[in-house]
Image (cartoon, rainbow, N blue to C red; front, side):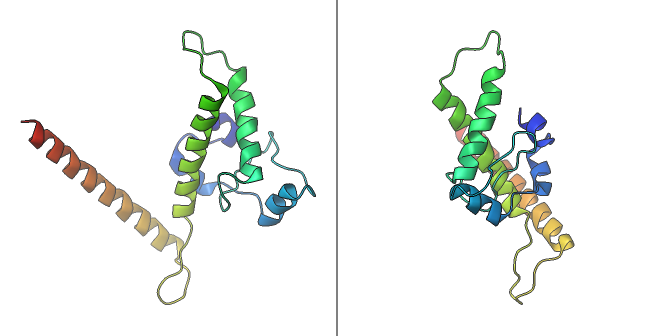
Length: 142
């Protein structure tokens, strides 16, 4: 469902997501403008997951999910499905925010190369921590 709506397959692909402008989000919240469009769905990456915009995104995704026939799968409540959608949205929002250029100590904005380097180093650090954790768990079993 997320793949179809946002035309991405991996969480990493959301780094290229084009969020709505702050004006669009604010105008929608104030009832002065249109909200999320199911045909061109965009997530408010800068605001809160509980923003009116993101709640509408959740509702659109929930409506799509409810149309699907999950034959053989147990029935889930609407609240469960909405929570599942919000969890995914929060994960991709965190990834998007992490891929945005940050301000360096010098006051300059990171370059794309510096962002990529930070992302690679972070992924390597998480991998090392995961392997260390895996070793400590397996060592404590024996």
